[in-house]
Length: 133
Image 1 (cartoon, rainbow, N blue to C red):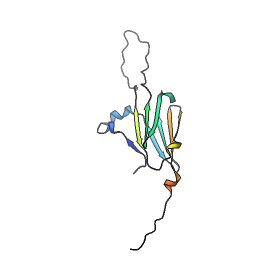
Image 2 (image 1 turned 120 degrees about the vertical axis):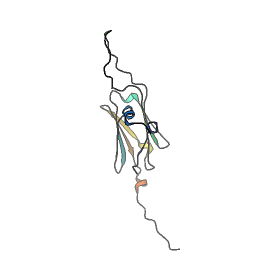
Image 3 (image 1 turned 45 degrees about the horizontal axis):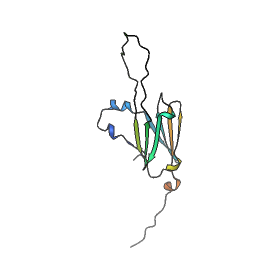
Protein backbone atom coordinates (compact mmCIF):
# COMPACT_ATOMS: atom_id res chain seq x y z
CA UNK A 1 0.00 0.00 0.00
CA UNK A 2 1.21 3.51 -0.74
CA UNK A 3 2.56 5.18 2.39
CA UNK A 4 0.53 8.34 1.79
CA UNK A 5 -3.20 7.75 1.32
CA UNK A 6 -5.62 10.37 0.13
CA UNK A 7 -8.76 11.13 2.11
CA UNK A 8 -11.34 12.33 -0.37
CA UNK A 9 -14.53 11.05 1.25
CA UNK A 10 -16.36 14.09 -0.03
CA UNK A 11 -15.84 12.86 -3.59
CA UNK A 12 -16.47 9.14 -3.02
CA UNK A 13 -19.10 7.72 -5.34
CA UNK A 14 -19.20 10.78 -7.58
CA UNK A 15 -18.16 10.88 -11.21
CA UNK A 16 -14.75 12.25 -12.17
CA UNK A 17 -16.15 15.60 -13.29
CA UNK A 18 -16.48 16.68 -9.66
CA UNK A 19 -12.80 16.17 -8.98
CA UNK A 20 -11.83 19.01 -11.30
CA UNK A 21 -12.82 21.25 -8.38
CA UNK A 22 -9.97 19.90 -6.24
CA UNK A 23 -6.43 21.12 -6.95
CA UNK A 24 -4.15 18.66 -8.75
CA UNK A 25 -1.58 16.93 -6.52
CA UNK A 26 1.51 14.81 -7.18
CA UNK A 27 3.07 12.83 -4.31
CA UNK A 28 6.61 11.44 -4.42
CA UNK A 29 8.47 9.25 -1.96
CA UNK A 30 12.22 9.24 -1.37
CA UNK A 31 14.28 7.46 1.27
CA UNK A 32 14.21 10.59 3.40
CA UNK A 33 10.85 12.25 2.75
CA UNK A 34 7.42 12.35 1.17
CA UNK A 35 7.07 15.31 -1.19
CA UNK A 36 3.71 16.71 -2.22
CA UNK A 37 3.29 19.20 -5.10
CA UNK A 38 -0.08 20.94 -5.47
CA UNK A 39 -1.01 23.23 -8.36
CA UNK A 40 -2.60 26.44 -7.08
CA UNK A 41 -2.63 28.91 -9.97
CA UNK A 42 -3.80 32.41 -9.16
CA UNK A 43 -3.14 32.00 -5.44
CA UNK A 44 -0.25 32.93 -3.16
CA UNK A 45 1.13 31.66 0.14
CA UNK A 46 -1.27 33.86 2.14
CA UNK A 47 -4.28 32.18 0.48
CA UNK A 48 -3.40 28.71 1.83
CA UNK A 49 -3.78 27.09 5.27
CA UNK A 50 -1.58 24.07 5.94
CA UNK A 51 -2.13 22.05 9.12
CA UNK A 52 -0.89 18.75 10.54
CA UNK A 53 -3.01 17.20 13.26
CA UNK A 54 -3.10 13.59 14.49
CA UNK A 55 -1.30 12.28 11.41
CA UNK A 56 -3.48 14.09 8.88
CA UNK A 57 -2.06 16.82 6.66
CA UNK A 58 -4.74 19.28 5.54
CA UNK A 59 -4.38 21.89 2.82
CA UNK A 60 -7.20 24.39 2.39
CA UNK A 61 -7.90 27.79 0.97
CA UNK A 62 -7.79 30.50 3.62
CA UNK A 63 -10.70 32.24 1.88
CA UNK A 64 -12.77 32.18 -1.24
CA UNK A 65 -11.05 32.90 -4.55
CA UNK A 66 -13.11 35.61 -6.17
CA UNK A 67 -13.97 35.39 -9.86
CA UNK A 68 -12.16 37.90 -11.98
CA UNK A 69 -14.69 40.59 -12.75
CA UNK A 70 -14.27 42.54 -15.93
CA UNK A 71 -16.01 45.74 -16.88
CA UNK A 72 -18.84 44.54 -19.05
CA UNK A 73 -21.01 46.27 -21.56
CA UNK A 74 -24.74 45.98 -21.02
CA UNK A 75 -25.01 43.57 -23.92
CA UNK A 76 -22.17 41.24 -22.76
CA UNK A 77 -22.88 37.70 -21.58
CA UNK A 78 -20.61 34.77 -20.69
CA UNK A 79 -20.45 32.02 -23.31
CA UNK A 80 -18.02 29.70 -21.49
CA UNK A 81 -16.83 29.98 -17.91
CA UNK A 82 -14.60 27.07 -16.91
CA UNK A 83 -12.07 28.66 -14.58
CA UNK A 84 -12.76 27.56 -11.03
CA UNK A 85 -13.50 29.98 -8.22
CA UNK A 86 -14.16 29.41 -4.54
CA UNK A 87 -12.49 27.41 -1.81
CA UNK A 88 -11.03 23.95 -1.57
CA UNK A 89 -9.79 21.46 1.01
CA UNK A 90 -7.65 18.33 0.64
CA UNK A 91 -6.49 15.98 3.40
CA UNK A 92 -3.85 13.26 3.43
CA UNK A 93 -3.38 10.54 6.05
CA UNK A 94 0.34 10.31 6.74
CA UNK A 95 2.22 7.12 7.61
CA UNK A 96 3.74 6.56 11.06
CA UNK A 97 7.33 7.15 9.91
CA UNK A 98 7.04 10.93 9.44
CA UNK A 99 8.78 13.64 11.46
CA UNK A 100 5.87 16.01 12.05
CA UNK A 101 8.09 18.66 13.64
CA UNK A 102 10.18 19.06 10.48
CA UNK A 103 7.47 19.47 7.82
CA UNK A 104 8.19 22.42 5.52
CA UNK A 105 6.35 24.14 2.67
CA UNK A 106 7.40 26.41 -0.20
CA UNK A 107 5.12 28.28 -2.60
CA UNK A 108 6.66 29.15 -5.98
CA UNK A 109 5.12 29.95 -9.38
CA UNK A 110 1.66 28.75 -8.36
CA UNK A 111 2.89 25.41 -6.97
CA UNK A 112 2.84 24.52 -3.27
CA UNK A 113 5.57 21.99 -2.39
CA UNK A 114 5.27 20.31 1.01
CA UNK A 115 8.21 18.23 2.24
CA UNK A 116 7.41 15.71 4.96
CA UNK A 117 10.64 14.19 6.34
CA UNK A 118 10.74 10.56 7.40
CA UNK A 119 12.26 9.50 10.72
CA UNK A 120 15.35 7.40 10.18
CA UNK A 121 14.73 5.08 13.11
CA UNK A 122 11.32 4.12 11.72
CA UNK A 123 12.99 2.92 8.50
CA UNK A 124 15.65 0.70 10.08
CA UNK A 125 15.35 -3.01 9.56
CA UNK A 126 15.67 -5.15 12.65
CA UNK A 127 16.30 -8.90 12.75
CA UNK A 128 14.20 -10.71 15.29
CA UNK A 129 15.61 -13.84 16.90
CA UNK A 130 13.37 -16.88 16.92
CA UNK A 131 13.58 -19.07 20.00
CA UNK A 132 12.88 -22.75 20.07
CA UNK A 133 9.98 -23.81 22.26
